[in-house]
Image 1 (spheres, rainbow, N blue to C red):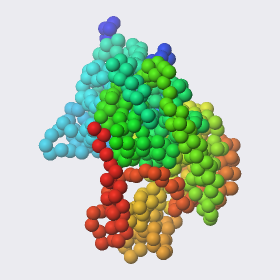
Image 2: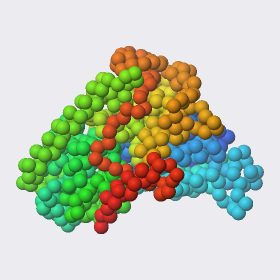
Image 3: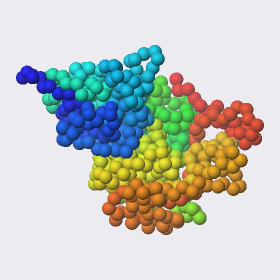
Image 4: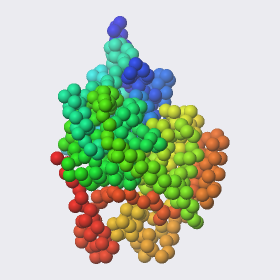
Length: 626
């Protein structure tokens, strides 16, 4: 070893490098990696596993499922506004491919996660190794290639010295405000153990500056003029507002101009719920306040949103024939959507400059008053739903009300899939920017409990409430064990409606009667639908399951039981599951919006025929924004 190199295995060099990576924004500096989640197997135990043991300052966390650990990392990164994350380690084969769904979640939601799947032998001579999927047409492929379409950056380290050029590229992408997501470094198990003389400079502390890119001044000036010319402008606030830390600047701009705001799933929390110009949820899962203003808006100012079909109501939300768009986004791809005037820049920096450019401007008072009245009317509707006392089983809406009102002021609520995201989007009253954590870019069943763990690790002093349905719980509940092992208490609200409630409701709306969405025994070799007179439900005991995983379990039968259980959960010493049955047929209404799910064009079922007629009527509202 010379004065300028150090001899390490590839795995040791990797961990040593990750330990020395820092990020900085607005003068605040912190380590970029909080540690490494992993499940050891032959494809990583003697490589990265040995390195983690050798360098304990890079903390290793044992998890139960590879997909779950990626979810936990993504939720942690979201809670940290993408300024910190985890590495995720797996063995080869099934351990690696288990992470693919998690990678898709991270990349879809622009959340940085470093994936380190073990891979087959680079030297090939002992192939096929255990868990190797062989190809008849090439030896230069493995299951780790499956990560390519769901990764922002992908590389395979076949030689130990390739790490020197791969690692800076991986960090470039992980710390990019526009292009971040899952980064995959595929690590052949033999290469992990091979030694190389690495430059000592590779392990020097490196600080990655997170820029606040400024908008083009010509485009900014034009955008300000468009806003001044508009009669009915509307802001659509997406997740980019929160990632940028622009909540206070947005609040000031709204107060200055009187422009009302509708929020996406990711953007909920960018304004507090009691702001009179916060119209709340917009789109398919939106409310009548935001959707009525959206319908007539002549200018839509999208901030940090990618305009998913739920936000745009399948391109039916904005019906003004002269509507125009101004989009503020760090990603050029999203900034240009809907033929918008693009401001490709950081949300906070742009809103600060836009406020100056709009000095003296305010919307017409009648328009502002209309928006404020709609805000108040919607709060009355939320109160109504919170006050429902459905029997014999409580409704989902009233249970959400209990959690919203009894959780701590700085609590974080997390959810991802089923019918709850829509109800939460409408009903949840956000009291701080991180109060509402919805993974709805990929809407991945199973995200909730693992994600809750990631949030709690990012904010250990906060109450974390995991809202999860029985379908999502059954897909991925095992990180309850990890939360108990590491001492991170979660409050898990487990709502059991004996099946896939969201798709059951969608199925009924399509004329298909909830077919195949109940957890029930087949009848006459056919799964039942919700219209069956006698449904023989499965004898599944989810409360016992949670108890078996080590959680404290509080079982409820009524609304009052649930209130008492939620209060009691605050006194328990470990992860607590509040189990409650709820009525699958009493949901929160839709409010003046539509989602395009095509219905069978021909069918022998009369109910499907009627649903097709309704679909043909609604699809005519879809627009091209050119």
